[in-house]
Length: 313
Image 1 (spheres, one colour):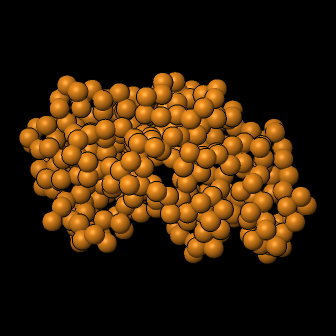
Image 2 (tube, helix red, strand yellow):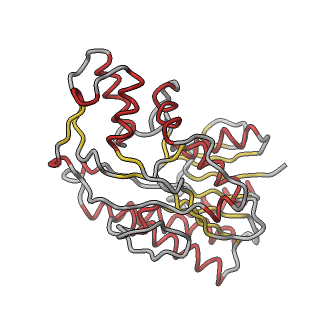
Image 3 (spheres, helix red, strand yellow):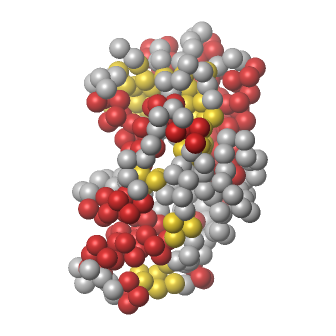
């Protein structure tokens, strides 16, 4: 029986991956924010900030696969209340330093698991045109993208110099009912539902024309699992290859709820918190492994609207 270790098991992708691997009768060790969990056991207090605990976790679990999904997100609306140094510090810790701690523990224990590092489309910055692929230049323009890029370079270095079997997945925007409240898709669904129940009159978005390569999170987690079965570590774009507008997303939800889009959805450019990024990924290499999205864009939006509300993360 294969053994998997998931770091970041409390987030959207981690929770979905735990469910997927449990369905496959895997032994799954989980690491969340301040807790560890053995297969079939209760949560225990623990922290990847503690190097000795990380080494002990690797010693005890001896995993065949490690999924490093840990990420530090901060909402743009929080920028005024969070010091810039704190944002940089926590981002570097989670995306780089703690990741290196696990890599070193694997080497110290003389193990050879397949390690998956969850990167982000934000490592590509704001490309001018075209689709991004595994060879595209990394030109991040935000803290999250910069520190994830650090993690990507670390993964590539350990793969080349230390001969670890590490794959990098460049994850584009992906949604599920478990998505956090500060993400635009969740905001659209939540607020339009409130309008349908007469609890609010309108919804305001920053840019209805903004384009996003949007996918369904369970499909992306399935891609991670598929990549981790490769006999060698490689890099993969995890994306749909299509872009759709924020306004298009909202209009589908309005149609499903029987709401007049033009009457309730307003645009206010002063609410923009980031520049247009033009991030659309080319998933051809991943498709060569046999991966395909299970839902198209419209089906995904309808799924997000109608599936039961999960606990946000």
